[in-house]
Amino acid sequence: MKQITLKISPTGMIEAETHGLKGKSCLSMIAVLEQLTRSRTTDSDFTPEFLEREENLTEVTENEVRI
Image (cartoon, rainbow, N blue to C red; front, side, top):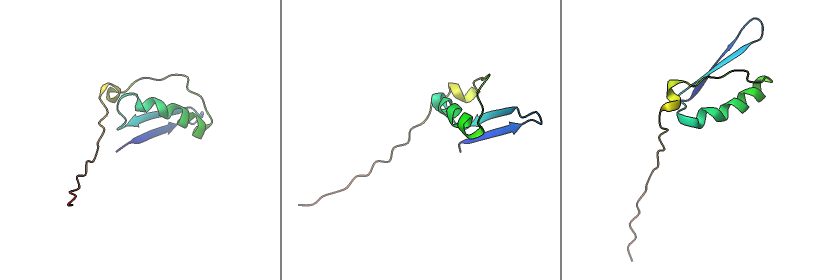
């Protein structure tokens, strides 16, 4: 499951951590979080999941046609 954990300090500093986002897919969330929180990123680090390969699941359906 893909999740983002936000921590907001009493001073208004926001920390975000992604969970379940592998590879570069987490980078696309930076702009989304900045827009939602009306803030800008001043520092970022990669989680261990960044180095993992994102799995793409594809469903294949076969249909038999009789003529």
